[in-house]
Length: 182
Image (cartoon, rainbow, N blue to C red; front, top):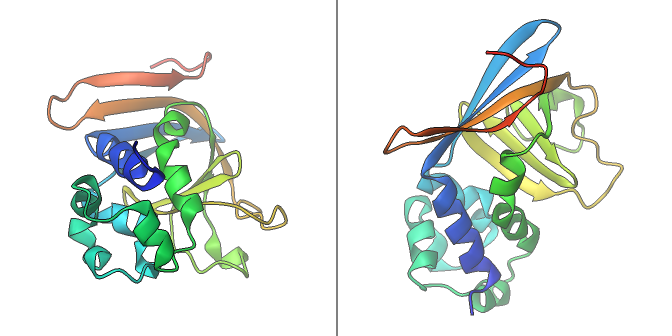
């Protein structure tokens, strides 16, 4: 049986084959947000910087270690890991990315409870994804509904979402606003 840790690694590996481009608009100005998922970013997104396992210390190898069965969810949890929500969020990230969601230009300086540095914030229900310079920075489930990371941030309208396979260049439109024309 595939545990949550392995599912998150498999889901992330699947995402790493693509680049997503979100074409967004606000007040007549279009913005393109490109997001890639390099293998080295999995370590931070999954929360392994908080893990006390030697096998997960190196960012660039964490994804391979998990895919090869080097660490199990039981071992990770036994080490005191408390970020299961990040793993759950990664499992369903592709589904959320390919549908219309809320995108904000992030203004972290307005959040007294956050030190996250990012350019954009995306909301998928109670899941928050922060991106900066085409790379995801952080993902987690908001546990306290009073913590509104998007408060004070300008909301962008998602006009189109494209997924491009990095090896083949094949491009697929996964979402398009009905009134948007190319």
